[in-house]
Image (cartoon, rainbow, N blue to C red; front, side, top):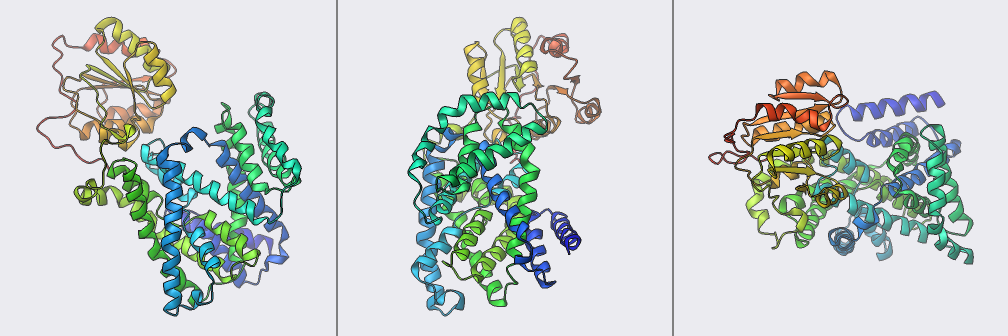
Length: 543
């Protein structure tokens, strides 16, 4: 039967992936198929062990990416907390109303069980949101960062629930865990010495499973919380992102086992499917609540709706909460299947809506703008370029060299754009005119003000897709001036030239000064190149 498990899981995952939906929907379906074929969950104890490992590594990975400072932003910690509370206060009466109307799956539930269901349904999917943001290239956008921050806060709420659900008081030795931050210098030295190969992976598994999960379980605390804390201890290290990537496929593979175990619990009945369909009507409430809350924190209505649609679904963490609740006997077992079906259906609905969100915003922008509060959030205001002759997108090594060479020849007529705040501060301390922004982000171009005398744009971003996107956005805004770009691979040169780039330089062959030599040689003394935005043309909405 083992080959059949792999064949069916792979086939279902590929079928779902082929229509651009998260494969986890396929894994849930594979679990149902295996159940129909007679596979019993008790016959595969290793599957449950792998499922537990998947959840543990998921939390460790979240900890690795966690910038604690981002959680202290009001729109993140207060927005997620208020959304959770209000969602439960709204969902519980609605579920009670369904019970009063005779919907069988809720008629016999008490208020504590309704609260558990409302709690599980209040979460949004980290897996889905990250996939959508990566596909759009909006991971560094303001709405993307806010959405990820809210998701991390929700994950923390879920971990706290999992910890409380253990039901046992921690050992007095648990207080010793407060000293873990003191071990960070030692952990960082170990991190430095493990290199970049298989030792890095082993170090990550050790930290997640031993230094986190096992250590916390030893003192009577939930292992999942230990994995999250272990990840947070390593989050500030320069190789944290590399470690997260190294463990990515381990985590994803083990999570397949988790979704399979859900399906192996049995097939949903028609009543379960009907109840899951009813739960889908809660999603518009979630979306509307996110839009309202995010605009209360002075974000633009566009940022709010983009973030809200990204969060407009049910969550795999809600499924984990439901799995714990049913295993403990706090919820009837069929509710795990109901939430699994609702989760899958929410992805089917959310995927096309996220592709249409820009169009939806364009249609209702006037009505949505009435929700905005003044003054707008400092990170969500218009980006003023001033009146530069040269615009450099990307202020790394190449961009910095180009900036200095241009300034030596033309004075302070240059503006640099850089998405990393620490680099922005570094350049400003060096006397360079640099503002924060991400040219690979639709939000950046949406908020960009007109530069009337811009003559040349230098694309100093090392990623080809980012350069392509920036060129497309410049063309949308009727920019007719000159463009130069750097590339990593020679095969990327032709596509840039086809888009009208005047000169292309290989990243490994051109220094910043060399990159700008052709600019100096070709500049006209009049400085009358076309502006970034044509005054006579209405600015298009970015897609």
